[in-house]
Image (cartoon, rainbow, N blue to C red):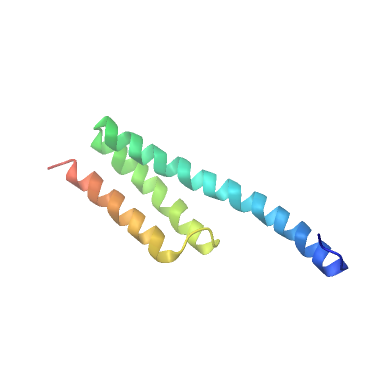
Length: 88
């Protein structure tokens, strides 16, 4: 356990940041799940709309430090490819 005042403060800060990051991560996963459900449902219009809504959320996760930039780009790219493949 933390003994110095600085270490105690850092422990409190980490606790708060963890809670904030957890809500952000959950929000991103919700948007991703909506895209996945639209793809499995076979509705391309709904999937495209869900992807359009999910992209800014995913990239916001990058700016907030939740995900790495390349991880987010890879996920967006793969989802876009799957949505595009629905039309073929």
